[in-house]
Length: 268
Ligand SMILES: [Zn+2]
Image (cartoon, rainbow, N blue to C red; front, side):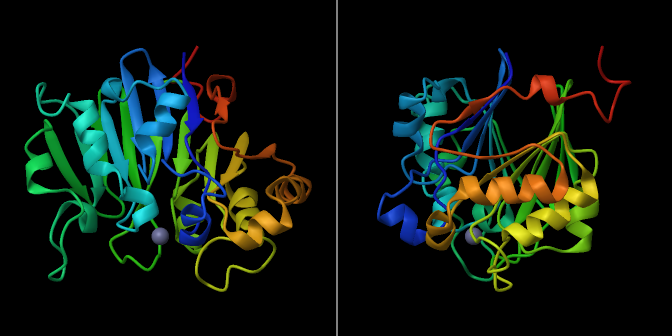
């Protein structure tokens, strides 16, 4: 059965380092044979175990950018996925900064771990690729890592949008159209994003533009935690009329019931 599992909801180095919220990324199980791990931050494997996720079943790891709370455990997740290289398997999709040397910088994936997996695919903004039954579109985001990308995952029965870290832009909102389940990193409450990342106000703009069926906000900074993510989720829901929930560590939801709204051709 399809599932989205939030291994962690920390949205800043301060929150992650103080361990106020866990990190570790997001698991998307599409069916029995397809399991994606998005943004494997610190503690990914430990949280996966706590949430009954078997990291050896992961088929693809998707990384939006090279900030440590998004990719710190990428190499470790590859070890778990491949039984330390005993089985050469899995696909790694990510921004160029994670998978290639960019501007003299070091890629986050080690050369050793590149050799453990089946395929490494560095992606730019506005690209399309398929993994089995899932079409993956990269969406244009704007973040401190200029190579950062977001993902739209068009699964057989639902579409998940996950921009990762970004500010609001009209192109971003447009590229997320058709999303059923929208996972938004909202580190800041109200209008306090300061042009650094999304805040609740920017989330409202995106949601009003694309009208998904369900929104989950996550990736909370200190200010957001002080403001209370549940309160912010309620404010967003009232402003948009779209069901909005605040993720908590270990939250598991089933996306299946939210699909097929925009794409009746694909489903039943
Ligand atoms: Zn970042």
